[in-house]
Length: 305
Length: 291
Image (cartoon, rainbow over all chains, first blue to last red; front, side, top):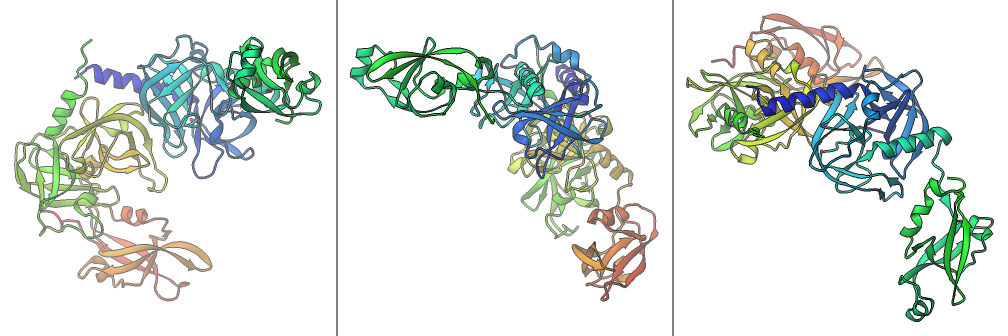
């Protein structure tokens, strides 16, 4: 009785067979392991929130061997940790990985592949329940797209591979970035973080060197200075020698705009903590002594990560 | 695109799924494996807790069409948590048992059962993993990502063709665990029958010759059993089988498997923990429970 269900079932099992050699179990926390993906030659990617120790990390490979892995670096903001196992070789499905061309579409089927040292490869199936553009995680990292899964993520699923029904690797599964659903950390974001971690061991972050607190700007002042937003952030500390101090920012200044965007809360400062803006000159609009002033701050690199 | 879905498969599977009852109380589900009235289910379904359901109880099987038959326990294997029941009827629709060794991770599966007393409920999902489960011994399980509930126990887990790949047995960490169908085949072939030793045991830690090891303390010896015949007593602590140390209850249950009459040598301590004694027990064919 060959029917649609049987052929779908076969296709799903084939996808698991094809991709599971690149999925490993990661032993980096007590009690139960998580999963990881052989992403590049000798390089394994896993979900950062499943890594609870930085030494004595092991991975169990598809051939059943358990080998030691070195920590290359971790980025809690995007929930990505990169491990290295010398002599592991290239992923068998690297061609597929390079070809993540079609964007994920809500409603399509996706498999979450993991590995357990006890029972070998494992799989969960669900649909992609939501897809949208770039977003910032609650941990502060920026991801290229929001891909929500309705597949059940079990305790060892995080760090596993998310594959869509067309055989594209969508990214890395994580239950650590949302309370309501498992997400895929998009492959393009994973690539960016892997590049950064391989280069420096950490992801550099942009830095102004100020402490701020949101404040409401009085109505009269707002009208007088024609400030568009109702809120700003007041500078409550200035790091000695930091980029803001060098630019002449003073305690008590109220930031109301950065470059051409208005600044109404701490959220609006977040995009200036990404690594891409380091070295950039940012025009800051501030209220000082009842008047608008403009200061140019050169974004620095946050010290002592 | 026409998409038949699981409807036909589920309907076919329902014909071969039964409810196992004790009196009016539903115990779980079962699978018709032979048209002449042989039903497979979980051992724990016919013997909840420690009290075994004897042939004198009101064990019955209700079919999908509502007809009900008294059932007799034919075979039980506690190690694989399987049992076979016999009901006095013919011309049933048996389920087809698949070769569970060919099942692959990712395949679609469908479970039919009577969860929480709801008859013939269907759930679908995928095979999450196939293999051991930490804490559940060395045996192989099918881990299915399907929603199961009490009452699914003993019912079928089938592949996309509707062939039974496993017997739904328990839910652990959100996953349904099923005993592979090949174990049912072995049970039908008589390979998994267990000889009866006639002891109730519990696991204890014992210190013999200065080393901690697992022991099985004998709590009770059944009158007239093989254990009584070999003079085992309550209070004895079993520590080995055929000279091998015990590592789990599973070791003992495994040693009892087989149909031939044979001698089993058990090592145990009585009183002095440093003095390991040995006893040879004659195991009988497990025909006691058969019709």
